[in-house]
Image (tube, rainbow, N blue to C red; front, side, top):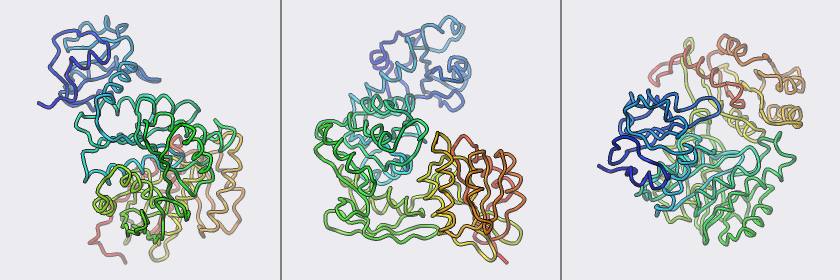
Length: 477
């Protein structure tokens, strides 16, 4: 049996004490009792809303090999017969195990942050590095104070490349996480006005993102967006942190990984990237210029860590947009189809503009319409009215004539759009769902985007529930 961890190594790393008859080792780590697999350890983390200790029985019933629990909650768990490792604080213990995983690993470690494109770039790295060695990468957007240590603790000993996403919405969040990760390569995708309500300026956001440089190992690398206005600041900050190898990507003439040309379609795109004086054609299986920019960063990292570049480039041809991040659905309606672009995961001014550009590049069929279905961008603070109003320009420039909105902040956009644009506004997401379901028509292309807190994923779910997938063999007329 190949163990992720032996129980003795876990006890040593976490300074825990065994309770009951422990197995020799575990095959994985889970923090959700519903998804735990037989042979895995269940860490009973106490979160803001739920306490994992309350689900210990369910974890045991679903096959947990052992539980990691806190000393204070042990008396209440005494009736359980499952083996346990008892610690003072379960989340702290998970962090210690993560540090032990990093200490024992010989993998090349990459950390990715940025205001936009973190998860997409992380998933691209998973894909482009896989032909060159075993990749371990964050699940979904596990990029916070529990997601990072969990991802570290789950990293197998034989990992060749470790890819970690690091998020933040306040200063001093990235610093402790990157010091756990200790990356060989730190990537900042871009700096944009996200979480503006928690910062006074874009410069403050850049400063918080630059905390990622503090954990880079000696001799490590930084990869920065040369087209971003904060590039010079980030470059200086990386140097001040002792990083000697600083690389850049973008259209800029001096970018190390340069976009020589881009040809975008509504289903895929083609990028020509120049690296080391050679230009390579890159077919990308997902549309959007912003996706191609993420590909520049991913291929740049592949070059830095010595991956096989031919295989890395080829891997992007089968890329598909992630759920909530541009995934497309072609659905049957009447005697034809409609297209739904799912951008429902999150939103800030930069990603909104990218999504609007994606909608603009999409081609409706017949008399179909391009429809922007937009919800509030949250955490904008005093900037909220301005950033919502400012979306009118990109929508008009893109020729979007149908805009369906939800949320109080989107009233500012409604009021700034001219009468030539057909605008529908609803106070709540649930109220907009009925309008969407009853108003879509054959040939339409809908792009659905909002901050996560608006719950626009419910609009996507409702569309998928009402309209079945359109089969390629079906005839439209």
